[in-house]
Image (cartoon, rainbow, N blue to C red):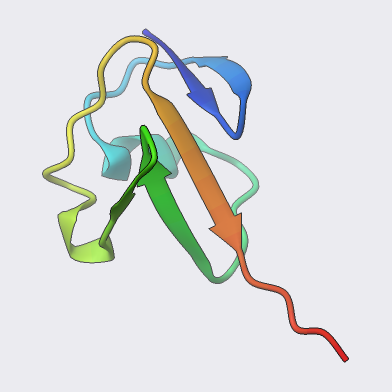
Length: 65
């Protein structure tokens, strides 16, 4: 299935957000995640199903000075 992670096309054989995160190689230590512009809480990763052409956005946090 093709989905888009931070606007980049990714072909993966996954069904849920939790499965996607397990196969992605470079994840920040702390992040938030949205699917099709809707935030997904960490507790819901396993139950949030992905579909063809979904758009997953991973937000990482940065401290500034």
